[in-house]
Image 1 (cartoon, rainbow, N blue to C red):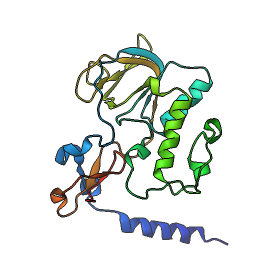
Image 2 (image 1 turned 135 degrees about the vertical axis):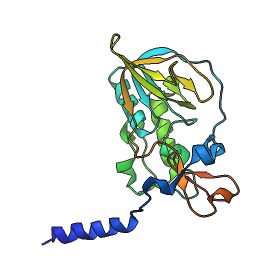
Image 3 (image 1 turned 90 degrees about the vertical axis):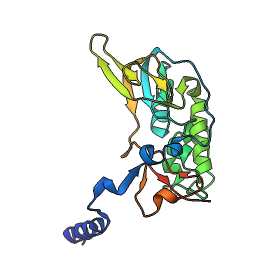
Amino acid sequence: MIDRDALLEKYRAERDKRLRPEGNAQYVRVATHFPHMLADPYTPRTERAPVTDHVRFAMVGGGFAGLCTGARLAQAGITEVRIIEAGGDVGGTWYWNRYPGAQCDTASIIYMPLLEETGHVPTEKYAHAPEILAQARKIATTFNLYEKALFHTEVERLTWDEARQVWLMGRGAAGLADRDGPGGPVHRRFRRHRHRALERAQTSRHPGHRDVQGPPVPHQPVGLWLHRW
């Protein structure tokens, strides 16, 4: 018989060991202190004209959530979609996480989506990062999502237009844009956000964090580990 109260108390005690009195103040905003680290180290930026269009579905983020939504919409015959991604390619976490030896700690056949639809058989029980990223790219290719994607692009504003019954998404008051310039709005009836606990890059406020030399190793946009390799 499991003592439920004792078990909960044990988990509570372990949680309390990790609580910090300063809360989120233990972190440093990368945009404020290390803005150069926000640049995409993997894919060169390709300049394009501002985009203004109307789609039925827009997915903010090109990770597995956005890819799976886009894939299922394609299977349903819905092609008026748009994936908007801050990175230079699809993959989300696995686009940014490329530190040596990175793996997923969930079994591949459970974690990696749309295996049957893409015909992929995982090579390991716990896949390494390159294979997971390759699966993300395969999903985008299989369901023709690349042609509907805007990379190196961020959404800074969402506004509901009651008269037209659409969402206006973009940068500032003008609309959608790349990181460096304004652009026209993208209108869509439905939006799909990726689920992440944190949305802005941060790093720990440890002693000497301002003095770290060498390039950072990105670990998802929500956290940059200041290592030197």
